[in-house]
Image 1 (cartoon, rainbow, N blue to C red):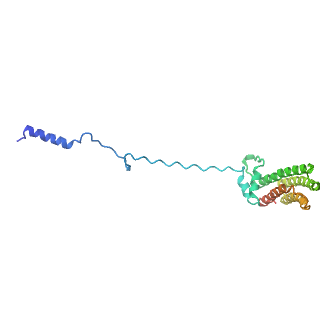
Image 2 (image 1 turned 90 degrees about the horizontal axis):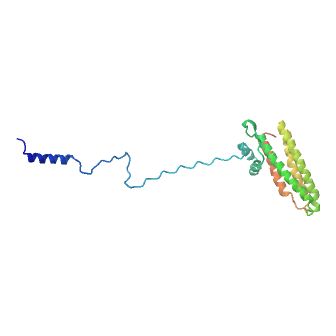
Image 3 (image 1 turned 60 degrees about the vertical axis):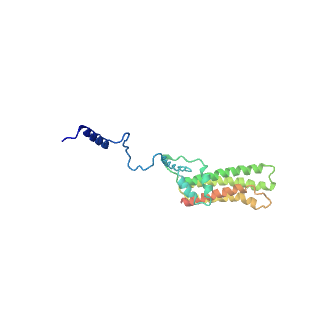
Length: 218
């Protein structure tokens, strides 16, 4: 026997209410792995590390300059004096070699000797200079001229691959520097007006000898 119409209507309403979701309900998709609480600020991404600065080479072939200068007694003076010299233009992308480094070191000696010669000549003409110092000052001028000649001889020997003459000429450069000093050391009453210049020249000449030895050029 079928249920009365009123009872059938009530049963239908009950079934619809049980199956239908509450009003306003909706589904929210959740991404896998998301566990942050609502409203929590997002973590900032770490800034990328800055790239390390590229080293600036001293000159083309700076590696060999450094390696040879480290063989000298005055490496800092060696590298700084070489860096101030006009750099050679090498053909075909060639890099500086041991002979090239030695030539630059010799150029540093030549430039400093020219300054010392000019200073000695100026002091010799200065009326305030001690009269007893005039002779030693003229000797210094002559010694620096001889030094330039010795450097010329060393240049030719390097070009010819003459190791013996290269060593002899560089030894002579060192002796020429000492000759200027000796004129003042022998007379204690004289102020050693060239001592500072001679001391630097002696170090530069010593560097040339060490570079020539390390590069197998003497």
